Length: 357
Image 1 (tube, rainbow, N blue to C red):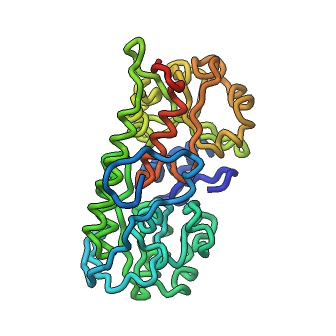
Image 2 (image 1 turned 135 degrees about the vertical axis):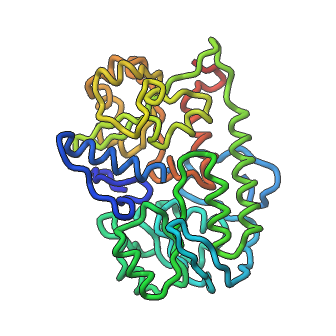
């Protein structure tokens, strides 16, 4: 996703099947909030044995494939999330249509068979692949020109006409349910592995991922006063004057809770996705720290620009200038690199060698 705001997801960058943009009195901010609500919940060693420490954020632009590339057992017939049965006979030419799906496909060992990427597949191994999206929508013509043998999408992929066009051309296309939290990581991996005909590799990757997440959670320090830090997730695009506060359905709650924190927006009563930032909403959330996507922080001019947003400077987080910044392309992917995301959050949220709030 580019730094300039578009009402899209950092992962998929598009509206769900059949969805129409929300219009009306809230303007761009609420259009963005609705789109993000639909989409955001949808940013160790290769042997899969003992869990190792999560890699640093400097390594977060690469995926780590399993040690041995699996041999697919095909054909397979799977249930697509949109109610169709799809038979896959070849994985020779794969097109994943979201960044998170690309991440799983590459990590399962199918990187050499991937022939295209979505604009949100930002990790290093995928960066030279042709992009098959235009203004965050899938270009059916671009996909078909690459003669894929299987296409992976999720329920946020669109427009619907492009999906229909790919299927009408006889290409097996499987829709996968997006992830809303850590509990969905294993399911997503299993689903993609089934589509590719390598369920055992899916089990291996799922177990590796879950063990690494558990290992990160063991590093979370005790809270000195028994209170968990309150963290607000903000979605910012300063170039478009979009300033949103995440609630229970923003997609970040699961990560924050796994990091031993409290989702400040959720606990302040925001039970939906996003709401426009106001001084009142921030005062009620009272965050001790603010979680941001790195491009969002850059878009408002860094920390100095962040505290100029009305209400930020008056929060405990603003007064302490305490932020947690994670790369856009991986923060809410909920996949094989989620342990690295969680480790990054923990490292930034808690002082090294210190205690929690």
